[in-house]
Length: 189
Image (cartoon, rainbow, N blue to C red; front, side, top):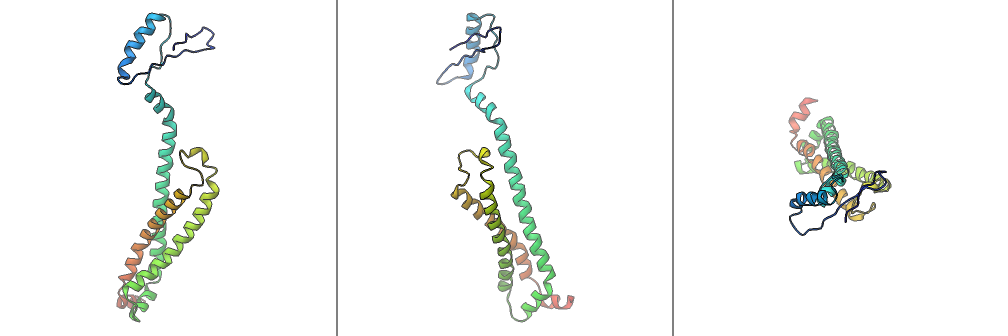
């Protein structure tokens, strides 16, 4: 189908060619045919349907990539923050941990104690984050493609992933606390 462009600019024309294969190779013969039928016609924006789709989706794809990168950065910052808070807690409690170990607590018990403290922080963060995300998901409706704003599978998957990342961030300070030598901890005081 071909529409001629009027001088008033009220209507612009277009030609759509459907083909099973070799779509890109049809551009030159199509231009020649249009020139023969309308020698004064303007030919611009010759592209395949996939090129047109990619061009129209490109801004949304860029937004999705940037949002994903900011999300990954936020997860990294959160993991470093949890590990930092627990590392500070372990260093401030070195004497206490040394006393616990000298009174019979083994490294597994100390490791578990620090992991439980970190787990409380992670659980609180997951609770607050899940409630906030549920409340804010309606605002994000325009950025979501193929997912309902309150999709329970997505919420569960993200909460599980964040829980795993949070516990992994707790693991390093807990392992460090479990390696504290009670004699050195007592002497440092």
